[in-house]
Image (cartoon, rainbow, N blue to C red; front, side, top):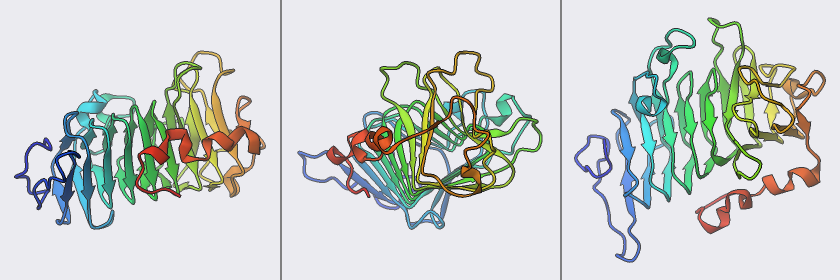
Length: 291
């Protein structure tokens, strides 16, 4: 569904125009669940979507594809987008491991200045395609098994729950993140602050998707579902010297540093400071609220 359409059963209220100088729209989702695909195209800026809570309001679809974008239940490609209190689900059955039947994206985020508050993302493989741009996820729930937060976004995840589903069909363990930063100059990376990682089975915090892959878990609870190695370079054949896989003052049985991957970093206060602020995503210039 394109946001240009206003007759969907999903959106009970039409686009409400604000003053002409600010081309902004607001949609309220009053139904409990809507089975459809939703696409916000590049031309539809300044959209605010509000649900009745991630446990009550959901956009649901079921599709697997060799093309991650094609499988996505929800796609946002317009900047200045905010969602509050909505679940995004891809309920495609888990197919054959390492095949296109496993690509089932719940949300594809490919725009700058996008924020999700109190939302949830459900799938198994490739749940959240955080493709590009500055993004903020606050108090969200994200569930998956393999590479379920991936892309090259410049994103902060604050106070989020990361729930791991074990995929017993494969011998390798899954990874929460597969961040694809490709050069030293590229300002991108996934920053997890005060999050909770738990679930079923074993998982890595992240794997090397690109030569400068960057993911940081800071002041977060890591349950025993996090493997002692912490990080992996599975399927990546390049050097690990430029990987930025790091932790800072995490706690819980999965936060024990003994046995961590040789390239993994334990950051100091000074090293982590620039990442633990919304300034990392220039958030004070565009976010309506932050911690």
